Image 1 (cartoon, helix red, strand yellow):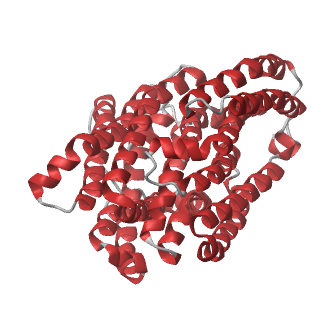
Image 2 (cartoon, helix red, strand yellow; image 1 turned 90 degrees about the horizontal axis):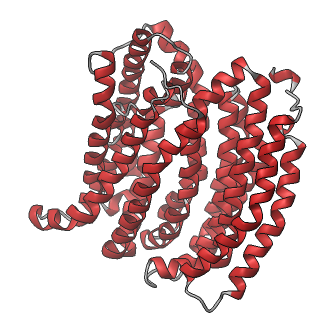
Image 3 (tube, rainbow, N blue to C red; image 1 turned 135 degrees about the vertical axis):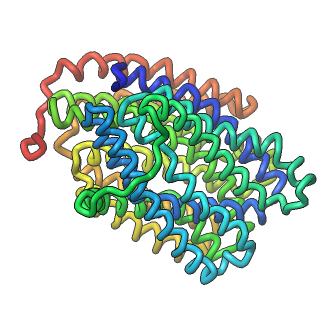
Amino acid sequence: MRGTKGVIHNLSILTTGQVASQLLNVWALVFLAEHLGAHWFGVVQIGVSVMAYALITAEWGMMSLGIREVSRLDNLSAIQVYARTHMGILSLQALVVAGAAFFFLPRLAFFHEDPFIFFAYVLTVFPQIFMLSWVALGMERMAWVSAAKTGRSLFYALFILLLWKPLGIWTGLPPQHLVPILLILAMILGNLVIAIPLANLFGAPLIPSWPTLAETWRRWQQTAPLGSAILILRILLNIDIIMLGLRATATEAGVYAAASRIIFLIVIIVEVLWSALLPRFSRLFKNDPVKFNTSFNLYLGFVLAGLLPVALGGVLLGTDLIQFIYKGQFPQAGAVFRVLSVSYTLLAVGTFLGNTLISEDRQKSYLPPVICSALVAILATYFLIPQAGGFGASLGMLASHLLLLVLLAITLRKRFHHLLGQTLLLMVPALSFMALVVWLADPIHVVGRVILGAMAYGFLVAWPLLRFRKLVPLATVKVPERYS
């Protein structure tokens, strides 16, 4: 019934297809930016940001709760009943969110750029009801999850790259209208990729049904802090785009999005990692607290080893990378990219720590740091955008992401092992050597500098990581008393 492979196996399955599809999505993003122009690309990206809030509100932590609770069920029929009733609650939430969005959106200034775009993006809450990856994740059917996640991204990228222009000619629709339409179609097809094997497993398709009022209330009590934290966390992901739409112009939002959507990939990578970790971590916390703490330190160390050179590389090469990717079309995006390279690295680490709290059933502890950081993001972007445009928005996000990481690190401070700190110090020479190589290779094309920098870093960071991997499982990792 349940997958039995290890975390590394699960992670490799999830990442194999995701890497390829996300790279294709970057290609599609660049393609859209070049062909829509800064103004309409900005309007579409504001629409994507609105869609993100609609999807998260309609989901309201249900999928995170579902993964955790399905991972603790061992009976196939019990999982089937649970999944169907979960979908029933998701259906109700989607209707409420869609109705609210159709009422409130016309009151926002950017809505009048093109109402169709924003209404179309809100409609994505309905295919989300049948997005069943969370069921397979709880059961650790990682191949199915990978196929569905990869399928959604792959379908959308291929639709944009291959069908967008011909469909525009054939239908006569404005090209910006086709973008959300193709996304909805990609979501539906991606849903089928996982719905079919699940239907075969359960003997019938999973269709929504309504649970008892008592059970519904129990799940809403569980998802209240989860949904609140995820919704407020979304402010830390893209309030910058929304604020640019409200406080600046769609064109400036488009330039900013050209940088932010590229570097945002590192947050997606951490989310993919947690898709593999959450079921196992949830069970480890319940059954083996010592191993949970050891695993937390081990995986966090490797996450930091992967993210720190991304931040440093973005600062060193951000302007050249943006010029190369967009062929000089968005020169102002280079400075934004350099700031967001650090900012989204901080957010990615914060996301890892926040998900650790969720796996510990401490989602309520996740909420205060997210609220404080979100308030900083709103206020900072609101006041900085009129003064410095997109660059001001990036500085505001940097401040909020740094605050989130600090607050979460304080919340989880008793979980950190001293070997983690030692390993971070041992990474400094590798990062320094990487910076030196990138600086010395200045005459070389930016792609060559990226490759040389990565090789230099990888060469020196291998020893501290191997040492860390060997010593942490052997060390006595103290379990915080109030967690055990």
